[in-house]
Length: 427
RNA sequence: GGAGAGGUGGCCGAGAGGUCGAAGGCGCACGCCUGGAGAGCGUGUAGGCGGGAUCACUCGCCUCGUGGGUUCGAAUCCCACCCUCUCCGCCA
Image (cartoon, rainbow, N blue to C red):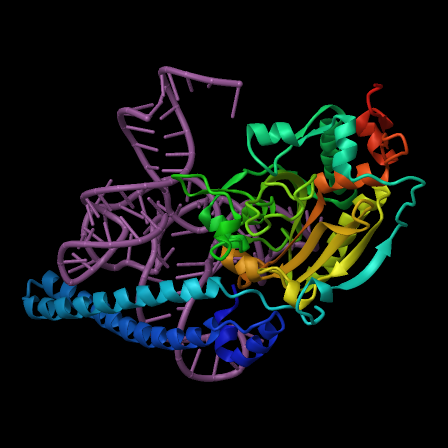
């Protein structure tokens, strides 16, 4: 949510900034209209309430003195009726304004490159060399089938498309990666581990920006207010909703493993094979709450921490700065980390690291004080995948595949795996 | 799921239609005291919105779980919902 004061004082500046994302939301002009009307009504209502408060005191005085207060009471009956009318209209306006504000995306940071689509994203750096193979590298789903570690058919039978069973060493690999990632971020980067609820209420989804605009992307539990989380970002960011943190509380850094659930509406036909796009996947998420002046430094650090996972696993990747047109709804700036996938012959997103500035904090009412008596300010929130686990499995299988169809386990993972290689069964 | 109790400021806790944004205590901040610390004493200690001022200022309105209602007037009365606790049942 944008700052309404900013909209009042610098509407043109906001329009210019949002224009970089694409079309300027028509909501902006509508906001000015509604806000003006709202303020006029509030002023009138407040004045009448003031009058009512004063006269109520007087009535109390008269009654205590045993005098007649009927005239004043009758007078206030009228005033109260008028207040009721005004407040009803104010309520309606507020609901409309709220809905409107919640549908306006965040303003891109000035360092975000111009551009309309992912084609305009800017590569920031590369790490590692894509491996060369003396044979035809196979896609991970073919490798996995041969190894007997993933079973998409069984999942389709039990649930439906875009689900998977991990089996045997595949299941262990997924679990090993989760533990490896969490341990790294906790031990080396100072994150606190949390294990969040997988269901959240509507307000939390609004807090991080998934709702109200992207209802169709989420799974909702019927006959309830609960949504399956699309990412641990939602529960973990909302962990501090409606709080005012103390001067020494920031920065707060959390790492959370969770399953993630996405409807993938509009993705029909895309990435239909393998682990790339599933309705349920695992992710280790990094979430930070920081002081406003620290958030861009924190974004660089957080991105570097996510990259470290790939470096330890020896997986080649590149980092891309999303252009304004490709930015997510709530983000002010985003780096995507893309891992090399030999079967695709290209880099595929495996992490997305964003600074939301105060956009989510304002929606979820997450504030802090600089000093014990200082005025509360909104924190800045950030998050990033550290990493998407299923895609990491895909990358390991493909990058570490051998001519005989076996897959070597990266060094860093062996303590968690207990084996050095996953080999196909002897026929 | 059944029965009961309860949600008040950072925390504990009073308050039972008007003088209550709310006693008292703890905590915290500042000051005095001290060689320093503690004790003691004093002062101050919520948030939101709107208007005026625009460094820390001021006026008004709102907020005692949330939302409605009754009333001239609600922390206080009524209704619905949410949450917490206790007991029973069920259960990993």
